[in-house]
Length: 402
Image (cartoon, rainbow, N blue to C red; front, side, top):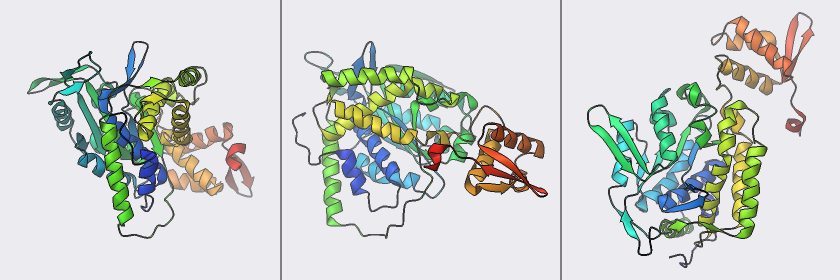
């Protein structure tokens, strides 16, 4: 199978090009493609390090304002995955229904060629979740369900769940991949505070985009697009047939080891809300190495260029990840603080009275005053008295001015 010729040089690149005539942000299309390749790899493929197996499942959440094209950008990939016959849970709205979907995905034994010299049949419960509304999936402040998603992400060999009326559900060889979407406000409302900084959020790659793409005229489907879609289908079917352990070159191991150590010694974020993500970043990076390798070839031998591309993908979205959690924090003031910061950074120079007026529905004047004072102390802004009025002036960092 590994010698089967590919029709496309790289599946992810081809998918992004295939969807270029849509009005969906390129970064959303890119990560939808990443999720699609992961979906095809399933639990059959893995990377082994020390006593741990890392599987290529990845939790991706697209974040942006309403109408920007989050859920719509997921649809072309979902169509291809459905035609491929992969187990999908599309917009499932109850925990029980999702568990049934996962259990059903493991009802058919699959051949594992790496289990022994002759191989044997085993149950593998691989499922990809596609949710255009993360809140509908996880509910509001539902810590128990988030714990379930954490266990699924970790690909437990055996997972049990107690139901109220049906006893225990047991699922073998769990593997769950997820692509979901939400807005910053809904994310804030749905996540319990205990999920921030560790647990669920540390297992997610958040892909943030706030700007709409430039206008693209609506176009009719062309023959070239139909041909590319067929090539995408054929190559992803080849990816689906890959199985076994991802090996690596010596150069890859050396560079990967340095990258893994760097994740520990030089955390990407200082914000405590990313403490858990910092510790798991090397796992995200390793998963992406497998995915981008499978996107371009059938060798299942990781090379330095796979690590470089995986790192590039992560770095690009990490630039904007802090915006994902703006307004999400351990303090009740987090939301109002975020609103004030956005107003100041947008208007650059705004009367203090206008800040109070814009936020009185969400907080009292004492809270607003404390938030502005905290921002002045942190040098996010400064105040200037002009006549009878006080203005708040944005003071961006030097790197933001460039």
